[in-house]
Image (cartoon, rainbow, N blue to C red; front, side, top):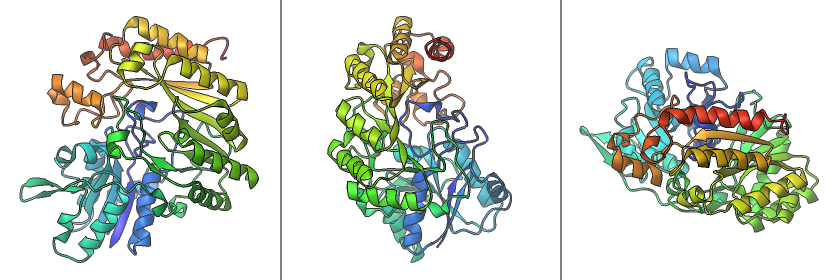
Length: 452
């Protein structure tokens, strides 16, 4: 089949990262001009190409003119597969509908994957630009789905992990069980990407790319979609498999990698093998990863740095222990202080993600959090307003009080992380004050003598 794998551009932001939504950081918007290759779509395009389908790949955020031509003239693909997110699903559906309207006939069939189709498949399919919702990890599902469609008939309707409209209603099939063996996936084919240097302000060496060595997280944070998104299954690649991809990345001319894993540091033994082998092979590659504020020690941080790691992003969230406990963060203020101290001693940049407007938040806890983050002295910090995403325990709590949140239709780029969003249901802070407090936090962190 002819397949267009699409990262839709957004009219609300020059770049939107759809392939991971923790519900807790980066405001869901462009940060410092950041651009990120769409890794999840690369995996989808690669598995479909390997299965014999005719695949075209468009990153609308990086290929603006090509995307505008697609909007104006449509395409001759049988199927469009796009990633979507809580913050963009309304606009993405309109985009897909417009592409079909400006094309010819009743094709293409529009499919989406991501958090909305996984957690709200029925609601996702109320948007007429979307025909099929793919729930959970997309790679195995899209192969089965397109192979069945290639046969003609309606056998595709029995594929696990999809939802679709049928006879005036919506059919939601059973979820497809997660295969924890990520080594089964082929390395993403980066030749699909445009001849374009993606910019990211925290990257030190260009060109850079993105990679993934695991999926899932053992945490239970009430604000995060990750555990439910992966059905509480931890998927991890072996060191040997990751090394094979890194070797290919170096051969392709990349000089830095951002590992998109939710918690790269969780796999200590695997990472020891990985880092020691990078050092042994004398690879000149730098990298960035996300870390969890538990289960990591100073020798491991030192080894990571020696292997090329120059930044770790941590979810600090709050400087109040009671709030950390309420959100089920599973860490302590002392653990956070210790890890940031180690990073500073090693010269390893530590990035702090911080949320305001948490469950039980008060003006006093916000003050405490700002001062706590300043004393941590991270390389940089991002402050955002806690947003209840579908697929989280927090969202479920809010829905019991304000059921109008349930369909997810009110979530978009205009509110997420930068404006109040049902926060009055779980915090003691006046909702109108939250936006101002976020600005205050940024000013007090970045405009201080010790930082400037």
